Image 1 (cartoon, helix red, strand yellow):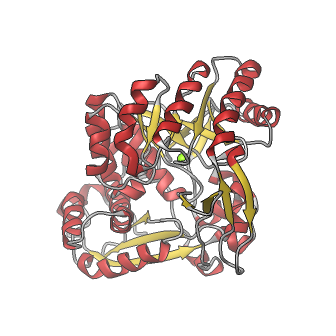
Image 2 (cartoon, rainbow, N blue to C red):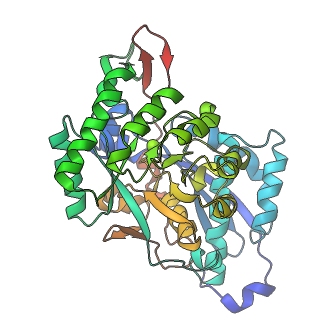
Amino acid sequence: MKPIRTVLWRWLDVKIEDVKVFVVNPIAAEKFEGIGHLYRRGGINYVVVKVLTDEGVYGIGEGTLHASELAVSATINHLKELLIGKDPRNIEDIWNFLHRATYWRGGPIFKTAIAAIDMALWDIKGKLANMPVYQLLGGACRKGVLVYRHADGREPKEVAENVRKWLEQGYKVVRAQMGGYGGSGKLRHEPAEREGLPATTYFEPTRYLLEVPKLFEYLRSELGMEVELLHDVHEQLSPIEAAQLAKRLEPYRLFFLEDPVSPEHKEALAFIRSQTTTPLAIGEIFCDREQVLPLFVNRWIDYIRIAPMHVGGITEAKKIMVLAEPFGVKSAFHGAADLGPISQAAAIHVQMSIPNCGVQEWTDFRSIQVFCDLFPTPCEVRDGCAYPNEAPGLGIDFNDALAERFPYSPVYMPQIRRADGTVHGY
Ligand code: MG
């Protein structure tokens, strides 16, 4: 990159010269067993965008949509021609242009593609201004962003031990599961029909509904009432079942109950809320502001789980959080392992700059060497909070010289069916 001539940028012409898209699967290539055994499910294909300008400054962004990565990368490649020659500083105009130019506006594919470009444009703007992105978004509202980690186990004692491990490392908020999503409701697993296809898990909610309150009763007896604990239903329950669970969990003071129902049942959150004071969080597969607005205005939730990468980027995530603010809804941005280090950095910059920041779901890419090599350098966590890198822009880079070492490999989502064979959501 050329040296940054901050003072001159105001008068300079700067144009987008090229947009490059990379799809990298470091987990599959390295046969990396960490982050939730994802290697055995095919790893994760991270979609990375590099927007180059005629002044030598470039920006990076991410558009990973797990198991639909090639749809996003093809969309970005298609939109590329519309971007070349544009002034990368006009982020708001480019966002609206791309959103309208697609005509079939919205939806996860377009919103993730636009998000990748949007992140790269904010990275460029930060480099031009010689400031970290959160400064351009209004500056720091806090020292760092509170994060939560995942603990799991086969029985309550093991879950408690794993929660303790995070607490000992300084984390303040921990998600507790027992046996993954759906937990003890899983009846059996059926291997895939062919290699490369996903296995099928059979699920019924009864045992899950009975075991989760027992888990939290045990965790509270072992860890006390002050530790911040949450639980992810991952949309496995019907509205009436979710209401039963939220009510039974009330004595154990959850930080929040995550995704109690699927987005199709979002209106049922009104009923669940009428039955319980357990705080509710939803939204990790919501991608349009029109989907989230009713959650705010009807006061159905306490935390919104969007990710900047899946709603159109930094520009749109900031706007959604402004919409949430008057309704007292805080952020709890999605941050599973399939949201890579660039989108993680974008999420931290947004949450540094908003008054209604709650908590960020956390994957510690910085502790994994291959991620540090590919994405120098992932955000850091200290004492349970994530901090943005203070370098201009997003503060993270992409080592495209390494991309060929980590080629795309197909990934499918896990398959869930009910006991009688009916299709159920993951
Ligand atoms: Mg979740």
